[in-house]
Length: 205
Image 1 (cartoon, rainbow, N blue to C red):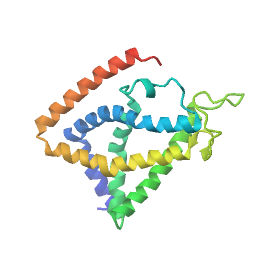
Image 2: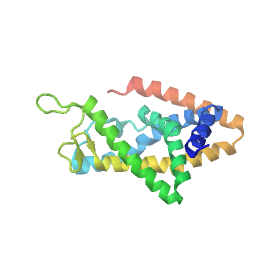
Image 3: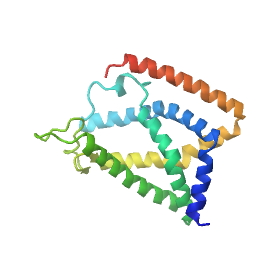
Image 4: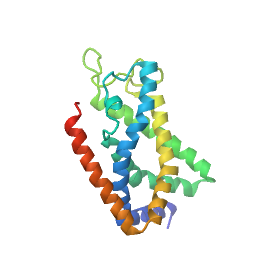
């Protein structure tokens, strides 16, 4: 059996467990909010230096507003990027080499996704005006849609999550009694649903 098949089979076995989906339900809720907080210092920097974050933004006034995109992002990481990490690691000469290889691949993926999504949903009109965002005047922009510093940061965050936060979270939950982990997840999910109902119904968009 080759290495790729071994990694895939091990991951498929994980996908069939209750613990995998319970843990990722918890991560979905937590990171939908926590990653919003990470955007606050970043947005302050961008507004101060480039003026590209509006005066009214959910970032400034509603710190508990859930950004579901981040929740889906950690779910995608768990399903697709963790087996990629394991496959790279198994073939690498060291953990550092594997982490560097993963980072380069994550950076390429971020560039492609940001630029590709931009060209689909943010194509300029006949007057060259971008409907959602305009990176065309920024240095190191990619097709006026993606911005390399953004992608460098996104790839770094993905790498930190994959190599540090994700395994630490998995180990912490594995050490808990199963019933305690189940109860924790149920409480967090209920609180998150209540938060979504409150924020989505009251925050002007």
